[in-house]
Picture 1 (cartoon, helix red, strand yellow):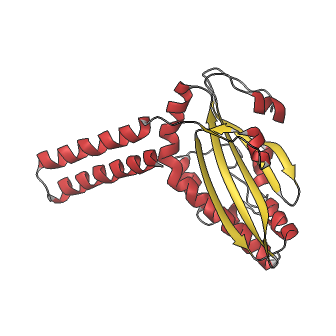
Picture 2 (picture 1 turned 135 degrees about the horizontal axis):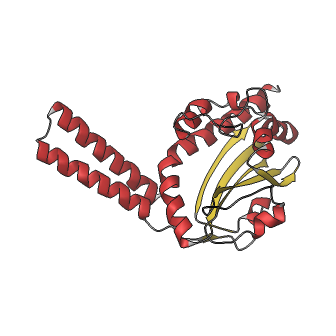
Picture 3 (picture 1 turned 90 degrees about the horizontal axis):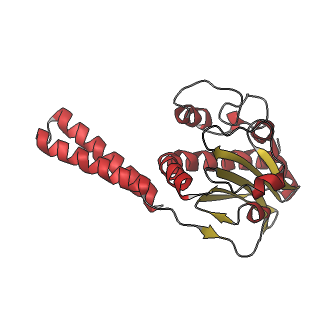
Length: 244
């Protein structure tokens, strides 16, 4: 999180420098110094080393596929509905059910069109179904409890994937130059007919070079990614609690 904070502090400093120069709150030299400091802070946030986190005992299916990772985020929400209905809502939520989803992924794609994927999901198809029939692989599923999906977010130049790997091939992939991103949704009983839905995203970069490359990307998109996941959980809660 320190890297993310530094990147956005740097962005704000650079923005303040531009505003100061535009409205002449500072001299040109002061604004230029502030801009340079902001860019330096941002770059430092991008290149800050990312250390490994390691799971020693697998407590959920996600742990089996990503026992080591460098980047992650966790979000949760309590839902006043039984487990079966909550899990069904996880499987049935569509992209348009998720507030701000279209806007944020449009910004992430920089407005560029693209093929069907989780970032360009059709209106009437559940988003997890879109993910697993395009760029994501269904790694594990325990109906009513947990679903785990994964994809490759970084690959060496010239690397080609002609077909989706099996879950075990995906798990074993450790060649230099790759980064694997995994996400789960897990349902846990909270008593009195309620459940807690927890989602975690983990990214494992296979070598130092790919770790550095992915760090800059992750620390830039993290706030938008966090908003999407929170809105996704709220969409799950709304669907489960309404019984639709």
